[in-house]
Length: 229
Image: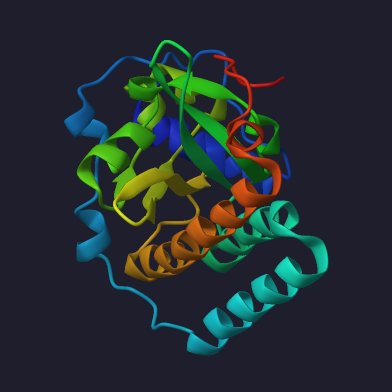
């Protein structure tokens, strides 16, 4: 089985050559304890770039203009795109907590943009994706190759780094806003947490408006357990 270092080296070569990163056929995904894929402490050990307050103001102003001109659904997509651009990731998304008629919890990927935008609309059982850790701990989480522990995130693999922050409305945790680095060329830091947290607060407000416009069922969608192809 190829080592993590060999996988990362292969990914960098693929990205620099212009190809979309996908797993080589000889790379086997081996389940690992969650502690081995959770690396949140690195966020506080890495040096962080200084905040760009002007960029943050411009992002929030663009979201306000979008709400007025295009409505909450399009604004939600713009918000996730802003997260992708500001954090310089390769895929970004918004995962919402949903419940079926039997009371089972799932996550729905309400929006996905970037390299793996095809993940949009997919559903996964609550505990089968790393979003559940963020929701249960009520704090930002950083993972390295979470597909080695969470089976439902494997269609997004390879995930050299995966950063997520909770989306709150009052005391309710609605889900997570996430950003992914497939290639490993981008390592996330505290400034990325800051940006995602600001946008997660904005996402909660936009989701509230969207529910008022189209209703809760339309926001959550119908439960499916596998990502769209």
